[in-house]
Length: 228
Length: 36
Image (cartoon, rainbow over all chains, first blue to last red; front, side, top):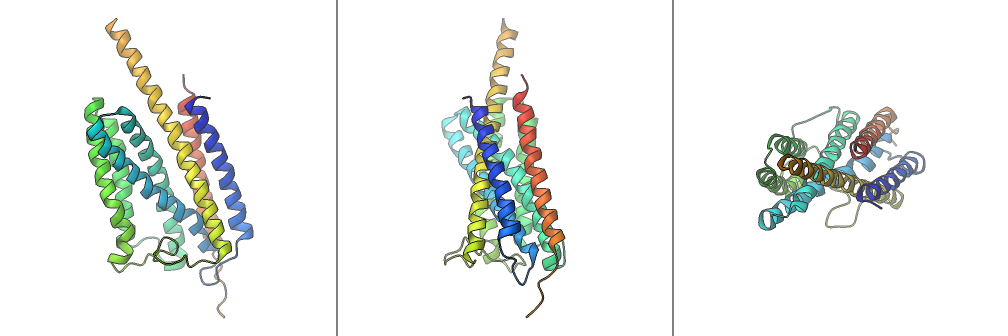
């Protein structure tokens, strides 16, 4: 089985899991009394946010290792992870305001968590634009690695921003030093959603990595034909 | 005890937007990796 096929199968399984998450969240998970049904946006928003941050951490780490090892596989992985991270960041930045409107009374506020997450999204977009703008593969990988490392440095700030500043954004209710403050039925739905998003990340990145590999092989073939 | 807020429309909107983004990207990847 080729890498693309593996990625497609993982993505398919992930999408089936996500459909099951929808059914469980919408039909079998209790409605939170104070926030109402809008609280269920949390089951998509938080796993997407975690993978938005994790994807950038992996882009940054791949960038650091690329600068030392010059292994093109690391650059390809970083490119794949950045594209998938951009998709997840788009989900975070759309579901967040949709939750904010009924709960806060506003779609958007320029507080530390929201603004730094928007900045991360722009960093992702900038990363992809740089990759598209620089033609020399070595230079492109170096510039991209530096941007990825900048993103890696931003992620802890985003995660800790709710502790460092007075923000409207809720404090963590799962990833915090003490035990998660969620009833078990809600926690189970959230964990199931996290598994679905993890599979989506793996499936998407595998396919995107295979695409980069195919493009590199095509470029090699066309440059060989040019020399011949 | 306060009434539960009636905001299911926002929830549905968020779930639909997420599905559209994820399925759209999955289709985009499928099309790009299917090209010869």
